[in-house]
Amino acid sequence: MEALRQDVYTIDDIYAFPDGERAELIDGKLYMMAPPSRTHQRILGFLFRKIADYIDSKDGECEVDAAPFAVFLNKDEINYVEPDILVVCDPSKLDEKGCHGAPDWVIEIVSESSRRMDYAIKLFKYHSAGVKEYWIVDPKKQQTTVYNFEQDTMEEYVFGTDVPVGIYDNFSIKVN
Image 1 (cartoon, rainbow, N blue to C red):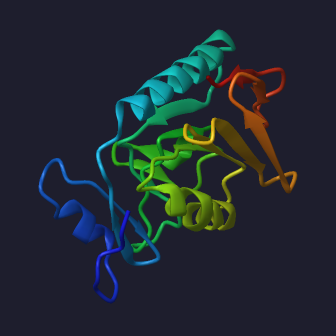
Image 2: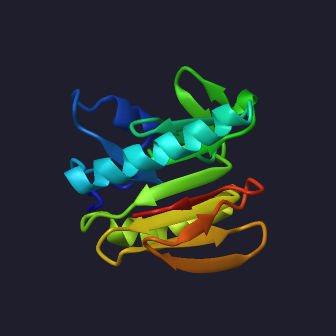
């Protein structure tokens, strides 16, 4: 995911793209997004179903959404991301355009083109925006890295082990 060259881009630039082209905007820098792989989509579908089923089973008020879904992280004109999966527990943050403010939980599934974004740029951005929990699911490394920003912890879990969900009690997911 390479940043395009211009001084400062805004959300208007994102909405001016032709249909089918996707990009994220971080601090005014535009990052084009490559189409996801089959592995990426299989992991995304698996995690989304697990999370949605858990929320439904608890009659939960949180909402889970999957990309493409707009997140206006800092409620400004120069930050716009599309996390692979996000959970929002404050319905006032949601409208037909997307999520305005930090989701409670964000999951990014790493691809070769997104590695630097997911492990560095987005890590900092999600933390500073107020995301409570951030998962980086890395199929190449066969591991899930969990940042619990409220507890100021980072843990790594190899695929096939239970990964506890910090924003919920008694919920874990075995990522394979």
